[in-house]
Amino acid sequence: MRIGTWNINSIRKRGSHILRWIGDKKIDILAVQETKVEDDKFPIDIFTKSGYSVIFCGEKHFNGVAIIYNSAIKIENIEYSIDSFDDEEARFIYFEVEGVSVYSIYYPSGTDIDSPRFQYKLTYFTAVLEMIKKRHTPKDKVLIVGDFNIAPFDIDVYNPKVMKNKLSFHQDEHKALETYFDWGFEDLFRVFHPTETDIFTWWDYRKMSFNRNLGLRIDLFLTTRVLTDLAFDCNIDIKPRRWESPSDHAPVYATFNIPIS
DNA sequence: ATGGCACGGCGCCCGTGA
Image (cartoon, rainbow, N blue to C red; front, side, top):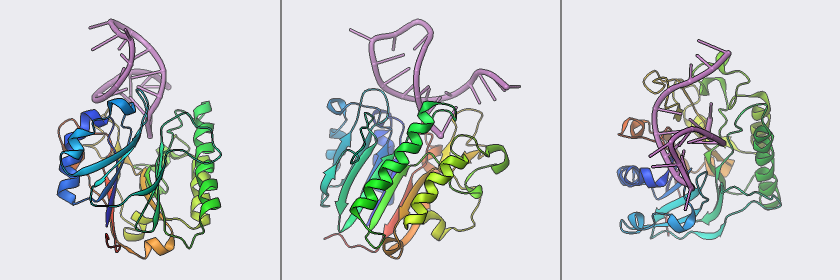
């Protein structure tokens, strides 16, 4: 079973990119973030026509998340909100597939360190982990995928000195992420690529950032150990960032030794 | 030190992204 995650920055702009990529890479389940569309305007047809099913949770203008998956796969127990957290923004989808509990999340950017949105971001990280702690143990197969809007380590930013305590690389954000690692999550990309540098998932549209590779690795797979042990690979595919009118993010995917029944 | 690009919205500028 191969799972992908991709912040596509408008699903109405990027439908053809998504179909091309999941076809090329044989992705079974794709989690997408920043669909930027309310539910009654979601472009369902372009996916169903190609043999995929979609579930989505959107709002007007901002945010929005969706799961696009091969119609032969059984997705179960879908939920669209975090327990005990009154969130008005469309950022969250939970589902189960083949015994794996999957949390697909578009974490808030934080906007600015001094902004109330930064506190909202930290609160969001806490709320998701609290939900997970109540429902699972670290011995369960639990996966979080999505746009975390935090680069975990020094090698995940183009210049750690410049980025130090800036948005997406702030000590408070690292503390939030650390609570996930402390509970038992692992950064699956780094399991397979522990020392690889200059590999990112997001580059600013401005300043020719992609050409200069001034990026951040903020789109992640977090896996519990049992799930890490079932993984064959975890890779970032930067090629779609070169396509015409691209998202500012590149997709990430992982393959697991889990047969589809 | 600032802005730069891209997106959607009752749109011809603005809020947001990170």
